[in-house]
Length: 105
Image (cartoon, rainbow, N blue to C red; front, top):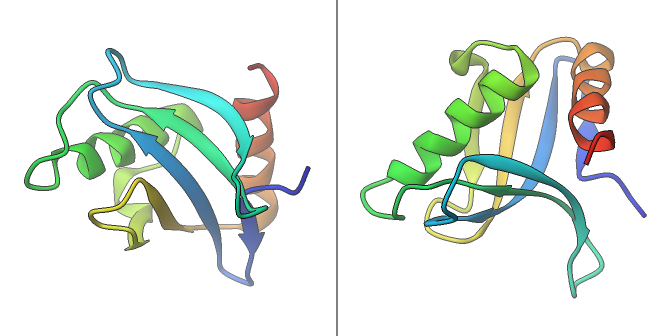
């Protein structure tokens, strides 16, 4: 399976499939979509209204990866389930953190 992230010189782009109203805030591992792309599966307990689910996703990833919320930016998918986030920082370090979060699932 491919990985849901791409490394760039100063950041990582992460593909996420978000489930709002998921009952709890959690990262549920990796998933291959019907389009062949790989996504990080995440769920948040809030409803997808007025950007609340997107904000909850950023908080969840920030806590899970141990990085500041300010280093996460939503690039695309504002109103879609499939999103792309930009994570500022050293790519090698970020990928190590992402692997640690997803491998325990």
